[in-house]
Amino acid sequence: MATCLVTGGAGFLGSHLCDELLRRGHRVLCVDNLETGSLRNIAHIRSDAFRFLQLDIITPFFVDEPVDFVYHAASPASPIDYLRLPLHTLKVGSHGTHHALGLAKAHRARFLLFSTSEVYGDPKVHPQEESYWGHVNPIGPRGVYDEAKRYAEALTMAYHRQQGVDTAIVRIFNTYGARMRPHDGRAIPTFLRQALEGRPITVFGDGSQTRSFCFVDDLIAGIIALAESGVHEPVNVGNPDEFTLLELAKTVIEVTSSTSEIVHQPLPTDDPKQRRPDITRARDLLGWSPTVALREGLEQTIEKAGRAGLLGNPT
Image (cartoon, rainbow, N blue to C red; front, top):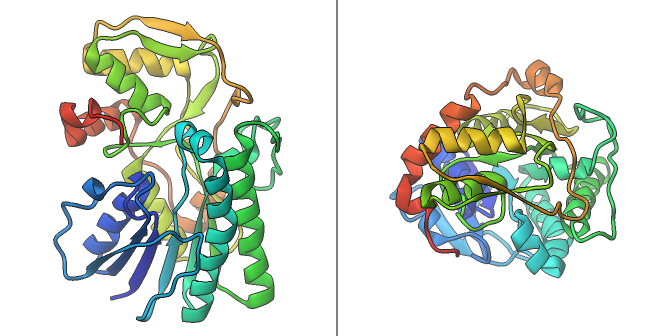
């Protein structure tokens, strides 16, 4: 039984990771300040192998027991959050990552950073492979998240090269599934909520911008495979199936049997025009590739979250 510490463990991705680690027989220490995470996401866990610690990792923190893996997932991740919490987002990426890496060093634990496809910005290379350095506006409103993650990657590699910490970096592409907050501002929970309410589905711009959507179960499997590998360089984990936002909206309407119509709103500043992962490294180094198609994943999300969960109040 390995002991795994998960920062941001009460968030969307963190809570799913906690579930899967427990299912695999590991002990889990869940760390969260509940700024964007929620106790509801972990309320179902009934296990002596699970411990919740309410901490804010932008200040130093310590754990009084052995730790084998540190999964650093903590960060505001949706636009509505990092635009509301710009300074905190930067502090989590800098101070928080520094403290999590220090803890991993002290325990000689394997450290895995949850990074993001946002490090590629509005990419000039398509699809995006890990060797691409990105096209990011560092002073735009999205820059607080993009640059926090880019800095966190640099800090992670510095700890690996200078301090000898056993590190890994996963670059996560758009992910969806149960426990996403209905009002968190991202496309799939927004579209599902609007469709189930019978309200117009709001698509930014003309809807021709593309994204690649990975079901959360696939993502978590890829993350754990990376953590249990010896890989140190960044690895893209996402679904390479590419859809326009307009195609996504139409698929959501079909899956929910909604009568919603599609309306258009102005495109946000620095919104990427296209996003699709090259997952060659994940396939070759981890033996991982996604298995759940978009329509199936949307149906599972609705089934697992339930109508009430997808229409819930903002948290």
